[in-house]
Amino acid sequence: MRHVRAVCWLAPLVFGLAAAGAAAQEEAEDAGRSVRPEIDWSLEAKMHFRDSDEERFPLRILALPPEIQDQELATVDPGSHIEPSTVTLHLDATWGESLAAGLKLDFIDLYDRNPTSTDKEWDVDEAWLRLGREAEPALVPEDPGGYLKVGKFPKFERQDDRHLESYGVVSTAFNRFEDVGVEVGVDLGRYAYVKASVTQGNPLFMRDPNALAGDNGLRDQILGLRTPELGSGFVIPYDAEGEDLDTDGDAQLGAGVGLRFGRPGGEDGMEILVFGRRRDLAETVEFDGTLYGGDLDLLRGPANLFPFPITGNEKEEVGANVWLYLRGFTLFAQYVDQDLAGLGRTGAEAELAWRFELPVGAAIGGRQLFPSIQPAVRWSRLDPDFLPPAGGPTPSFAWEWEKIDWGLRLAIVRGIDLTAEFSDHTITLVSGAQRSEDELLITLRWRT
Image (cartoon, rainbow, N blue to C red; front, side, top):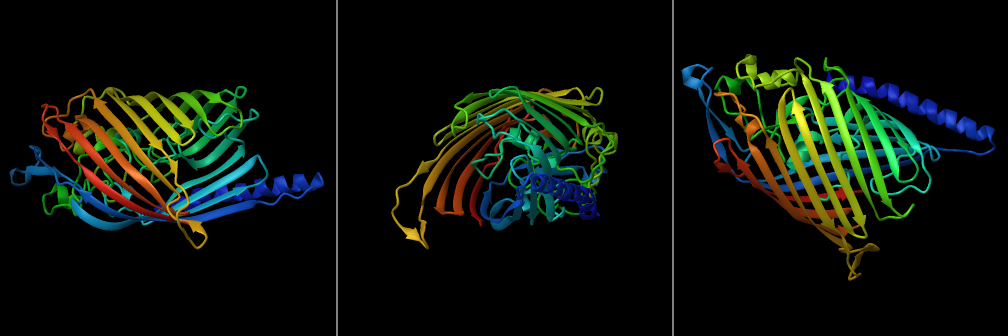
């Protein structure tokens, strides 16, 4: 059914794209020139070696019958594993300078499956149509412009130029997944711009910040009949991927104001963005495969038995980003202050990366062997300022998280690279005790 819904909302976009392309071509032909769409497509596949340290946290849930009160949070699928995570189809089309479209389909989708590991195995990650020109982050356009984008696309404050396969706790919590709606951007000269969006809003749910999201809310798990296949994980609230177009909540409004610095048309530059988003949380959002609901239902706990101290139903974020590109050096930093129905938390994240081009030493099939190497390090921190309800199944919502990811990406030949990285977690419980949930991830990526 989810796949049918995806096709239903994707079909009007495809027809709109075809109509807009035909109109652009007709207009061009009337002007005495021919405009044909330029199609660019590629396939990408990822294979991983993952080694996750095992950690367990005992729980006693008093609302359950005495014989099944003793539960636990546990690392998702600990130990060493070799696994494919995704095969992705990228499809981009352009009609001249001012009309473009993008489609991104994920298959297998192992690391995005949520709320349980039995979730969908293919997904429409992106499907959008854009009229006008949108400048890349930290790049000053030669001429001011503007754009209108419709469909499913990333949030404008998200870091899309990522240098590690893992995510920081801030990018996991606030902007990992795409949203559905309309976005507009207008340049105020070359160096300033404004952006605004009206979107569905990603439903609030929970997942582990490591590679695998975990199994949460399985009926047999809650009744103590069996242990979940992959473990619950140490979960945090996050903006999950929408499974439907209607969450029964109000539309999410977003706005941003930005400044760019650099030489117009140059490859190096800096950008500062201040942004905000707001929507009303729905009473509940249903997810397949779990007894837990999203949005307010998640914060009230199963059957409203373990409510966090929420007030109202508003979900708000304000934050700021910095992008810096200087030759092979890259910096991305983000700060977010969030209010979840009266529950506050802040997050900060920064990533440094430096790409080095290597001299030609050998070649395979006319392609240089080991053309570049790129070390990267990311620090991220998530600070809730609320306490968990006594006896509830999600005390980790209120824990402090600090995560350092460091790694190295080695280009083997053009289109094939290897990324080795280590995630060092420091999790501080409400009591002050600490846990760790470290993970090693080695990724072989191939793209046509």
